[in-house]
Picture (cartoon, rainbow, N blue to C red):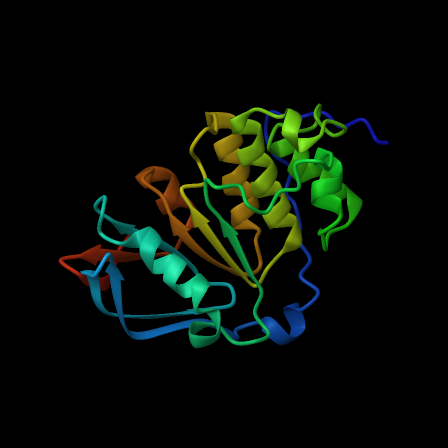
Length: 218
């Protein structure tokens, strides 16, 4: 197994999406006239927006405005909003995509669409280079967060939804994740309270305010 060192600055990583030739510029998400509720309380009225392959949007709003509920509604009703050919990768703090009995390396390689040098670069950038043979159940909470991020990035879904991905990340690892997202070929829908970081990795801001969704400058 190659010995990999974590660089102080992350080298450029070129993700390869096997579907790129057919996905490029394709519509990956369409929300039109969606009312979002939680416990029968209206959070968002008539939400409306689209994402195309390659778009990256920061979904922002006050606590309790409905950001997470909106993305969960999309995921739970995928066929209503996402074309059949689109794969969704969803990151949240529940860490549901990990197999706790598998090693770090097994978790990412068993689902990865990337070549080995990209796999190792992502693991190094997310500070998992010294944990490759540990089972996921042996990792700390912060290491599990980084492992789930690595697994999703290396699966290269056409639509990547990230709900507060920088929690538990130090400054160096946040910078590495930003580098990876800059190179990510698919669409990204990001929820983050870290305004400076979110503005750096996205090109558009979708704001939830007074139960409405509007685009603004990020």
